Image (cartoon, rainbow, N blue to C red; front, side):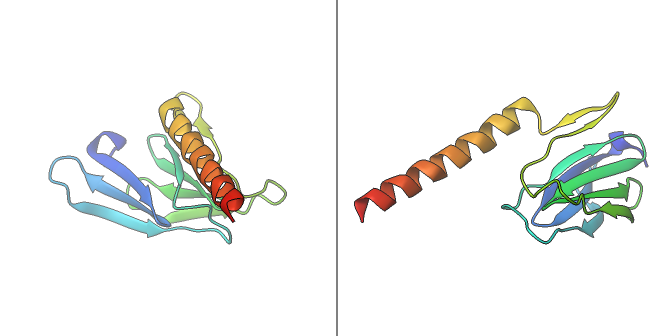
Length: 119
């Protein structure tokens, strides 16, 4: 299998490979960290590996079967949203996704501030 044959979906502590041709699940791997801010998982991949960041942990999965190869708990880095880049393959999240996440965060903060002043 190669990266051109699948779509990767990352949601709710799982990374799933889905066949582009028929929509079937090829593999699904549960990942996680101690602290997960929402359900967002940052993904980046090359021709043989999937890199997934969530909740302060960076995971490396085998692209062909989803097998977890390693996890780095990234001590001292914190638990926020992370950007990943695989040189020659691009980065994640892309600008549009990042703008959306920032807008969501800002909207939540504004709602919380309005609710607090109404009390």
